[in-house]
Image (cartoon, rainbow, N blue to C red; front, side):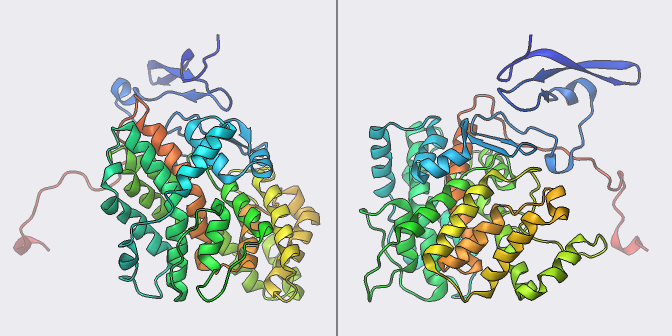
Length: 436
């Protein structure tokens, strides 16, 4: 009989020399089977070696499932395409936090609670003024999110389920406000308070782009685009930043500190900076006329140049999020009628070539979500320094959901990866006068 949901009915046999050990095989509801090596060290005196943990399941989770070979991304079992097309971001937040889609009454209550928590403590504005004006918005966001624990002491007791939920709602509600404040501070404009009569995405756009001297009118097409971007980035299983949040949380750290750790990890160019890297690549290409030259370089194995925003480490097929992002990107470009941006011209032509060129099609090097989101965010008016900030804003709910699941897991233990030590063996201290 097969094993389901963490229970085991089969074993794998590990043989080393003349000794053998039976290791349980665990099955999830979908996805690969897992060999349970939790007792391996106690039984054999040996560890496993897995740099990057790419073959290791670090936890049991019910939140997100990815099948990279088939191009599948599910939030709580729901395809990302359906959630992004038919729902909205706060509905997705509710799903990730509570496990089920909300009823109309539950949705209204959740929206109300999030909206009424969007303001931040007034002293936070003074905290922002301690940064240099040219500070990177991600540096400001890491610090300001970490500082929330100094302002909201009543929701840092992780043993209290009520405080955990309050902290979760607060993070989802306040991260757009902090992100917008980081942007405004970066460009030297005054902070804009949130408005309770606007939806989540519209509120964020207004806080970023309105100024006190004139009325700001939210464009529904642009608001819907931002909402989709948030939904598409809300969670992505046990990636580097999510694993960082879980590892920090396993020590019992407060939720604000854990999310700040996740933001710091996301800042790395190999993780959250991919859409910014894609746009920088378009700038390097420079003009539509030079695209063939760079396509040729991309095909040359001896040339270090790589087309950023094409292909994906996880998705060996088409990134399911890219299909929605492609549609959203063209909606935004059509709505804004941008005709004089050379980078967008390069992007559109590069997309056309990549979808038709035999080299890219055979290798499934399709444009991924980072390619389209970078173009879209630039068209919306965000500088590249804000791209990863918006990624962090969207991913906060995934981090919170994963953190909450970990805290409520009775089998949760503090994270403690092992190592293969290759340093010096034991040696005795030599006084400095006798060293040669």
